[in-house]
Length: 325
Length: 169
Image (tube, rainbow over all chains, first blue to last red; front, side, top):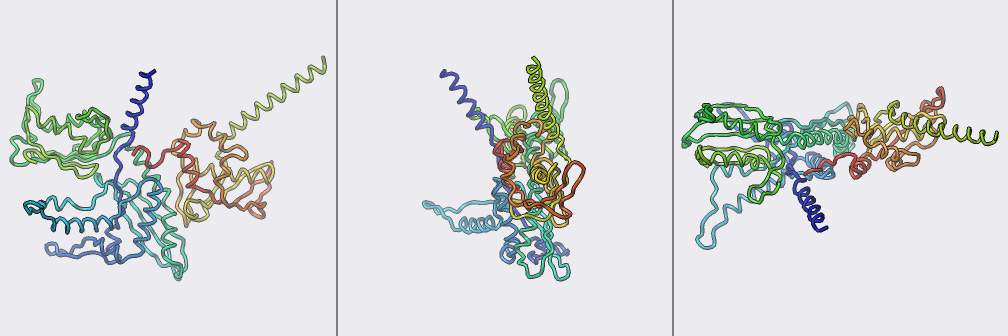
């Protein structure tokens, strides 16, 4: 009886450990065209060409409509178990973090927090799925109508997961804009959620789609064209890495996007959502960083003996550097 | 003897009739696609406002069928778009879902079944004018119905018929 009970308990534990994949972070970001339209961009001279980038802080401060739209989207996403990360708050947090980091000194030695330029660059607002928001108020004679567009974009593959347009009914100019904004969101939300559901179903069936980039420092003793003898065949280092992907991907699905002596980029890599943790032997949910762990281990061992650096860039993208970290 | 034979005959007739009715009901349930529905406008949050037609031998039966059709459309067919409202996809994506859960849905859609809990507002008075038509074999009536779409979705999620958006995470 005890054995049966312990077996059942083990099964439950295994299922609970196995059952939860890593949850993507979702963030609503005003589209570039919207920022341009509402005059919230920063213009700069790019080698003689006039260029601009969106000023999100200004957009959040100056547009009530934008806040209403984001609130409406956030509400229905939260209702469906995906509370979205606030870009506005994230920008504030990063600003405060920078100030605090600049002021912090060690208690004993009076040292400062060290941060390289690349670390500073990477410390920005990140999301796994970006909800790109755009809306436009159209005047139809004395009435107003709102066209609304929301695209869910996978941050790593740049693929549009779900994209929908909502249109409010044409109402008189005296109707508060917030109510027509809300109507346009309600009009499209079920279609949009259905698109997201389709993406998640695909993710559970075929694995998470990620991007892996391998790069070589000039300190690396080999490059991707170096040949090794395996089973009496001369095989390029790049082919060995490609074989690893063919072996580890769900149904061997991946695309070798680019390949040269110094760089390899794998896209549309379908990684499994779970793997065995080598430290405790348990099944755990993994992201792109966890997926390439065994590749990194392989590269550190004989016959390669490489110094390997891994830089995760969210759930679905990872950079591997050879020759240094 | 005659009385016995008569009783036997009546019993057999009733049994076969009942069996046939059940069989027909199942059959008609499975081929439940013959109705018209249009989205009227964007409903309040979590609801769908539709105009749906129902057919029945009497006006009352047609009204009941129209209500069933509205919920059926939300679950299996989806709602078509209109000039002011986007289309709504069906809650059930799997085309075999009805087959797989036939007992669940028969119970859900039985007379006075759980489906009625997802119809919030109707023109429950007897439809008149263009919305009530006498057709061969009965009546065809149109109702304006507010379906509690989000509640219906939660019900199906909780009953394991459809997946939650965040299930697995």
